[in-house]
Image (cartoon, rainbow, N blue to C red; front, side, top):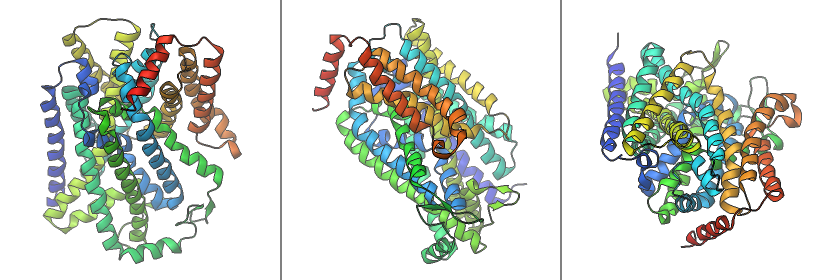
Length: 515
């Protein structure tokens, strides 16, 4: 039987879910074409562009994974990962955003990343877009499934609701507003979700510091644990471990993934005025740096709370529950009355928001790949706007059903694919995006070689080379990114130059970016 605090938490979460569905209903009336559905008609403002991009990027990892890593092993791994992501975020906005916005519009008004690849390289058979679409579908469906699973586990742990029921309800809500309002609904809800995530971080930080005994108490605890509060060691009950230069470089490589994330760079393509991208860049970078820093320190705070007995120990002989740190602190917040319970509900809605903001963007990316890039692009099927919209929405539903099936087992290891998918997109798409934007000699054959070699090398390094250990034990994104880049250059130089029209278009984009 639910007590008052549980009811308050549930009401706050239900109110949040109703709000995002309402956003979907509102934007359904403004989504009249396939272009509107997948790119919002290029109507995003600078704030929505910035915050929806970062909210769709961070997912529940920001509120669960990062604090959990800091809680259990100290700041080294979490901090270097965050530094890599922060640098990647800034550089992506600085060099890719405006140029991609201009290029995709000039290159046949491309509305998806795979479509841009084919139009940029005059791939009339849409081989590039077809292969890119398959890669997106392969990685994003289970990635979306992990988001559904996270929602199910959250409701199950909080209220004892059956995992499958909770997971399906969460999936229905996400599918509802995404299917109704498409890209505009997803982007607007992501903007709102970034606000909820921010509130969650701020409240947990303030409450945690207070209950831990103040900043001094938190720092005293951190410094008392050998290797905990240093960037060159990791903490363990068995003694500190070294966090060497090779590991640091490997961890920083997470930042390379940004150049190839379809659900992030789509926001660059969708902004209404490219001149406002500078403002978006500043907003996005500031939010990312602050939120990552706060999330890491929440892990440090949680460790101090466990040390003084305020928070139960999350790592025991029975298992590691460090990723539930914000959930557990939110439960403590809810013990202080009705208002506090409602605030706790908002905090938990923040975790839900982080998960939903990624899942909706992944759904759209996978759906556009299946319906627009494969059916309409590679297979040359022609549809009216009305039929195209029906196919687009139906594809979202079908992909969601597959994702639900993948997430059906509550004990499955579907979350492990998140870092692997990040590497896959970063290595397969990242180099092609960069070379297509900045090297006019890049041709279709080079792009195809980079796409295939990057994707294949991620698998080869992950499952064959990396297990050998030693200096080869590095994140698969880095070597795969390098291999893809080398293949693009070599194959482009060894094959026919692009048509003169490609060079003219490249110079036109270059000139437009100076305006």
